[in-house]
Amino acid sequence: MEYQEIIQRRTARELRPHTLVNLGIGLPTGVAHYVKHEDGVLFQSENGIIGMGGRPPAGAENPYLTDAGGNCVTAVPGAMSLDSALSFGLIRRHVDTCVLGGLEVDETGRLANWMVPGKIVPGMGGAMDLVANAKRIIVAMQHIAKGQPKIVPKCTLPLTADRRIDLIVTDLAVIEPTEEGLVLREYAPGISVEDIIDKTSARLIIPDVVTEMPIAAK
Amino acid sequence: MKNPITPAEAVAQIPDGASLMIGGFMGCGTPYTLIEALVTAGKKNLTIISNDNDRVNQGIGRLIREGCVSHVITSHIGLNPETQKGMIDGTIKVDLVPQGTLAEQIRAAGYGLGGVLTKTGLGTVAAKAGETVHLNGEDWIYMPPLKADFALIHAAQADYTGNLTYQLTAQNFNPLMALAADQVICEALEFMPVGTISPDLVRTPGVVVDILVPAQGNRPIKPN
Image 1 (cartoon, one colour):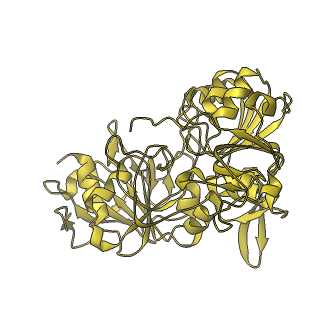
Image 2 (cartoon, one colour):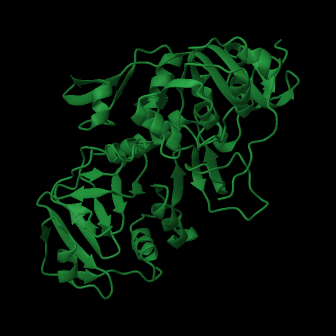
Image 3 (cartoon, helix red, strand yellow):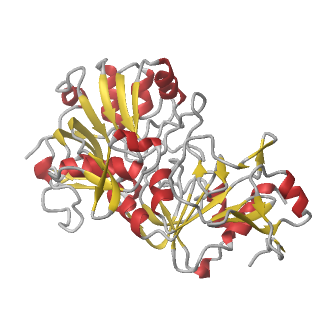
C-alpha cells in the first residue's frame, strides 16, 4: 500500500457520521475516497460549498463548481453553495473535523504548515482560520520528509495557530498530542515501536498498550 | 437602467495607482474579461485585494505577469511563483491575511462596521497585522475594515438594474466586494430583462452596482 493510502484510510475512520468536515488540498483530499456515502459525512470546502463530491468525468465539468485549488468537482444531492463570509462562519463555529497536512508538529501539539521563511511563502489561505477554530484538527502527513523527522521537540517554522491539534496520522503511526505530551497510540502494519521512536525527534510517551493501525476498509 | 458598456470603456475609469478588489477563488468567479481589459490598457501601480493570485499568467496572475501591480492584499500566493518572486525581490508589496479574516474585513467595510474581532491568528505572526485586544475576559485580534476604490466582480446573471445572481462556487468574495468599494464594475455571463430574475435568487442588489459589462466567454476548464 502506498504511504498516502495508509494515511488516508486511517484518517477516514476518524470522521464522525453526519458532521461537516473540511479536507485540505493534496493528500487530505484523498481521505474522501475512503468514506462511505451512508456515513453522511458532508465535505465543506472553504471556497464555498457544503456537500462537495469527487471529480466529474471528463466532459461533464462545470467551470463554476470547484475545490479550493480551482479544480472541477461535483456536488452531492443536498449540497449548498456559499459565499466566503458564510463559508468561514461555518469554519469558525460549525466544522467538526478539519484534516490538513503539516510541515512540523511539536511536543505541545502545535502545528506549523504554512510557510518556510525565505524559501516558500505560499500564504496561510484558510489554514489559520481552520486550525484556530475547527472543533477537531487532524494532521495527516508523512512521518519523515527528505530524511528529516516532522514530529519535533519544538516547531522551528512559524505556527499556524496557538492551539494543540487533536491527532497526528502518519504512514508509520497514530500519535495523540495531550497535556502530558505526544502519546503513541498505533503503529502501522510491519512497523515497530522502536522504528517510530527512531524516526521521531520529539519525545514520545509509550503507553502499555499500542495497537496496530486499522487500515482495512470499514 | 444600466446599459452594459465595453470592457475597455469600463476600465478607462480606473486610474493608475487605484485600489481594486477582484472577486474569484483560484480563477472560479474571477472577472477574466475585465482583467484582460486592464492588461490591454496597460494599467500600472495597482493595489489588488483578492483571495489569491491564481496561477502564473492566469486570471489575476495576468496582472502580475504584465507588471500592473505594486501591492497585493491576499490570503494565498502559493500557486503563483511570480508573486512570490516579486515579494522576495521587493518589487511587489504583499500583505498576507488569513482568508476568513480577509472576507470579514471586506464585509465589515461593506456593511459599515468598525472592524473585526477574531481568534484566527492569535499567537502567530498574523497577529502583527492587527492589534491584540482583551475584551470580556478573552484575547482577540482586531482587524480594521478594508475598502477599495473599485470592485471588479463576476456574476452569472445581471438584470439591467444591476441585480446579480451567482453560480455555485463562483460566489466566494464577489457579493462581499460588491458592497465594499466606491465603484462596482460587474461582468456578467448573461443579461436578463428586469423582473425575470426571482427576488429570492438576487444575491447582490442592483443599487450597489455601477457598471455592467458582458463577460466574454466562460471560465476555461483546466485539467485536474
